[in-house]
Amino acid sequence: MTDPAALLLALRHADGTFPSGGFAFSQGLEARAALADDFGPFDLAAFLADQVLRRWAGADRVALVRAHRAAADLDRVATVDAEVEASTASEPLRAGSRRNGLAFLTAHRRLGTPGAEAYHRRIREGMAPGHVAVVQGLLWARLGLDETTASAMGGHVAVIGPATAAIRLGLVGAIEAQTAIATVTADLAAVCRRPIADGQPFSAFLPVVEIACARHATGDLRLFSN
Amino acid sequence: MSAIRPVPATAGSESAAGITGRTGRFDLAFHRVGATTRLGAQFVSYPFHMTRPFALDAALPEFATVYQQSASGGVYRGDRMETRIALGREAAVHLTTQSATIAHDARGSAARLATILDLEDGAYLAMTPDPLVLFPGAAVETTTEVRLGDGAVACLTEAFVVHDPRAAGATFARLASATTVRAASNRLLFADRFDLAGTDLLGPQGAIGARRLVATHLLLGPKERLPEPTALIAATTGEGFVAGLLDLPNAAGFAVRVVADDAIAERAVAAAIFRLSVRAALGADPAPRRK
Image (cartoon, rainbow over all chains, first blue to last red; front, side, top):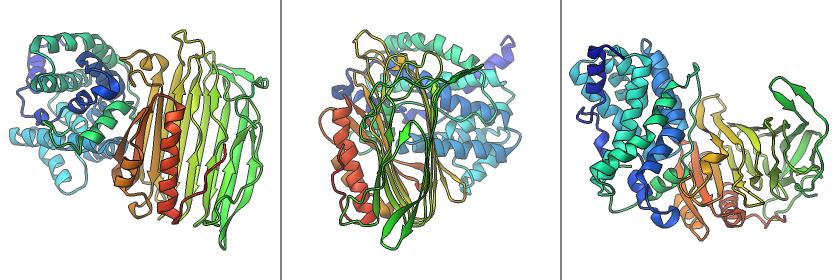
């Protein structure tokens, strides 16, 4: 990306201050940190690598890109959305993705992003679940961000969210978090370069996080929704 | 007949996509006849073997049990194996194995194991094979397609364990798994896919930490014919494993994910889930299965 205007647009929409609703979710990080007795001490870099390579790469990124390609046709976007719903086994992660998607969409609706109002209506009417990766793909395409840029933005958000949660939970300091983020940046970039076929199914392997989230959902003391 | 007897694979053919080894089919259709479930059409080819359905459960005369056996030493490079089970309306079947199945070094040619399960209205199927033991270099692609009629229930286990017999830090090459569950209308209810390299699981920072086994137990169907979540949680708490109960999308049912130290720890979980599933769907506990 060499166009400063496009770069600034991407930075603004992937920034932590954008009202995306992501602050309420740790993507299983809080739950995983609580399972130290079963799976060893929590390690942010390992957690982020797991998220990038075994979840985001084959699932969220694929959903984002497929929604980006389908952005002109909301029926096709809703089909991708329904597939994400069916492909997310964990209820806390599924519900978190829907809530995060709705918050993100609501912000864009208030900002007047093209397509936001129409897709918001579909969710209200129960015609689409509104998963965050799908909504990201749809809206970033409607804002004119190209597929590769949108993919990198999605990956950035997927890493920054849990890293911020780790800081808020007191698991790491800000410098430690940046060090951990740096360890997955090359992987993230490599994943963004992988081609995605039309209709590519979603693939993920996070049994430890799913188990942790299942236990966390019934816990009394927690800061995040998932 | 053990699934781990070391019989070499029969000669296969070589294609541009790698070796295509043996092709085997295990194709059974069951029907409910009065109080019992009977085996109808069947086609079983090498390396699969089946004796006959057993009636192991005096309290459940409709419940037929079949052991899917193998006359070979496990899964070899390039294998193409297909299992197809069709259950007529209200038929009830337990399909299991006698022992774990070893997946051998594929030397670049993955084995493909396909399972197609078709349950008509009110049918019950428990498919509880022992874990797939992934030896160093093993490469396996599994696909499971399930179609559920109205009120039908399926209790399906898929488990794998990583095995490094020489403790030399070696691991399997690849394991890809794709499960899709559809309603009779063909609507997609649930999909579960992963594609792993053995290196993803190496070391304490791997995807399952220091543990070696991963199992997924699917309990599919209407909630009124499935175990209570509290019973499932109670039954899947213990030593040597960690488990979580997942409430599946589209009211497809539940999944229990298990990460365990080894196959022994998982065996108790699998037995408890099978027992709860049979009790909830058919109304009585099953008799113990001999292995």
